Image: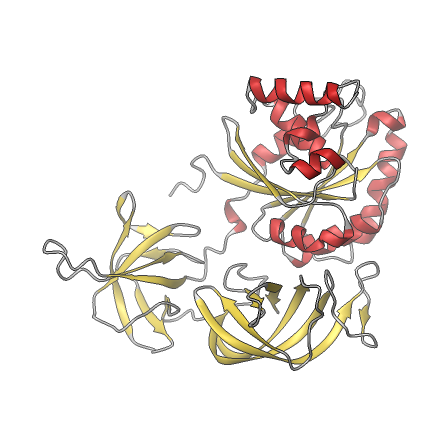
Length: 418
C-alpha cells in the first residue's frame, strides 16, 4: 500500500505579530517557483507604492485588503503549493493575542506547526502560547524557526540561547518532535536555499525538512472508525438494490470481508465491498472518502458509526474535554450548547468547569474559572445522547468536538476529548 503517493502535508505558521510569518511563506513560494510572474509584478508594484526598498514578500499571503494596508494578518489565509516531492497546504494564522482562536482553527488538521521566533526578542509570551496550542492540538511535528538572523549578525550564540530557552519550556509540553532552524525569511537564508552566512549550522533547510518529514504515520491506522455521513440509495434500474454508506474514514484500515459492528444499534455484518470515486477498492484508510456496502440489510443512518467488532470506541454521554473558547460571551456553567462530533449532532450541558489553563505557566487556575474568549480550560459535559468517542491523543477526528451556540448558531468552542 502506498501512503506516500504525492503526499499532502498541511502546516500552520504561528508567532507574534511582525515575526515574519507572511514574509516566510512568501519567500517559500517565491524561492520554490510556486508563484506566477504576474503575481510577482503586482507585489513589486505594491511594494514600490508603499515606498519599501525591497520586494515585500508578505504581500503574497495577506489576501485581505485591510491586512495589506495595515501590513498584518487578521484571518487564517490558506495557501496551496507543490514541489516535485509533495503537495502543501499552508494555514497562515494571525499573531495577535485576540486571534488565538484563528490559530486553533488553522492548526487543527496540521501535520507540522512552524513557530516563528524573532531572533532579537527570543521566546516571548506568544511563542509559549502557540507552543501550548500546538501541543494541545497534538500537532505531530513542531519546527521552531528562529527568524531575522540577519539582524543579529547571524550569531550562533543568539540561536543557541533561544534554542535552550525553548527546550526548557517545551520539556513541560506533550510535544514529541521539535526541530530548530535559524533563518532569514527576508534574505532567504535556510528557507529553500542553504545559507552561506551560517556555516555553523549543519541541519537541513526548512523546505528540505517539510518535503521529507515523515507524516504517513500521523493518522491512526490501528482503530477502524467510519462515521456515516450519508446513505446512498440511487433507486435506478441498474442499481436497484444498491445501498451504500458514504463517509470519510476517520481511523484504521477497512478491508473487504472485515467483520464489523454498527453503533449504536450493535448489529453486526461483513464489508461486502468498498466503492470510491475511482472505482472499487480492496481497502480504505484515513483520510479517504468512500462508500461502504455491507452483506446484510441493516437500518443505518447519518451519525451511526461502523467499527470493528473487537475494536470499539467508548460510547458515552459524559465527557471531559479541554476547550478553546472562541466567543466574546464567556462559557456559561450549566449552559446548554449544541455539540457536533464526527457526523453526530446533539445537545449538551456544561456540568462542571474544572480549571482554566494559564497559558504562560501551564498552571491550572482553580480560583478564577471563568473561561473567556481565547482561553483554554477543562470542562465536563453531559450530552443528550451517547457519542462514540476516542481520546483526542489517540484519534484527532473521533477525539474532537465543536460547541455551537443554540441561539446564534455561532461556533463558540473547539474541544479535545481527554
